[in-house]
Amino acid sequence: MKYLKKYQIFESDTNYGIYDWFEDIKSSQWGRSNNNLSESSLRLNTEHFIGEGYWQKITSLVDKMFNSLSKVDIETVNDRMYDVYDEIPSAKDKYSVLCIAYGNYENHDKPNKNKYNGLISVMNVNEESKLRIVKHILIDIISPTLNIGSYPNTMLRRSDEQYYVTDKKWNCVNFDIDNYGFKDGDEFPGDERRSVTIYSYDIKNKKAYSVDKVLDMYKPAISINIGGYNNSHLTGKMNLRKLESDIDEALLSILPELDYEEVVFDMARFDRMYDDDTDVNDYSFKILLNF
Image (cartoon, rainbow, N blue to C red; front, side, top):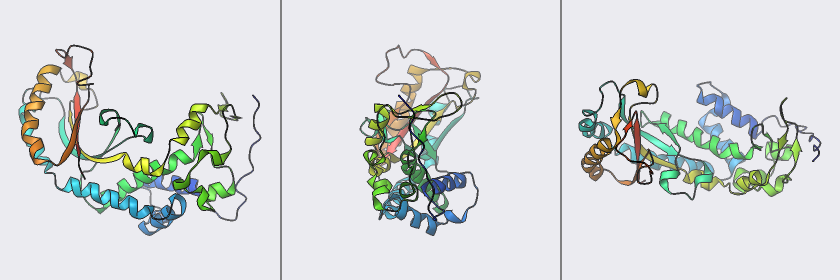
């Protein structure tokens, strides 16, 4: 296989493209201010780069999720978990938080237990938190349309039209990998160690993408964590069988007060192939809420 010639790009007089917007949104997530990230500019650029009507669709989704979260008394949930916490080492972190669960669009058709691999905590149900979630969603929508290939990857949008989205054809909502000219076996310059090779699964992955799939991968939830994420092995062990039995007992008083879809347990519960009479350092589960 031979290298393809690099495309000549960025000849347009327009000086703000979808990659620029993407980087601005990412920077703002780290607290850096930018005039391109005011709510009005976000709306304008969403309509331009993603598709007409999608600012309303995204913000309505976030409003519905936050309305669901606002109905949860998280302190009551935490109180109901005290009987569980009393049975485990006191040094362990224990907390219940409101959050938004999300996952990659590739998991769209998987069951809930395999669907959501990320959580965004929502400490305050307010407009600032809503905007933070909107930006997270925008990043998730834009990102798959920018690059292709495993690490290292290569730029996907290689013409002015694609970069600046000069036609609706190049909107995220109309994304079609066949329009970008990539084929199985194409090679591009990568980093100093290796080139970028496009494989059939890279193209298949892009074919599975859609904006609406990305939006479907967000859901309001309650996350309950016992043990924490750092140094949980230093704070003592918990018997898995006893712990899950205590959690089930607590859920009997928690779930009737929630409008929920499903409880998703970690540690491969119900599918595990090992004896649950064993010790663990940490445990977490989430309650997916209806909205």
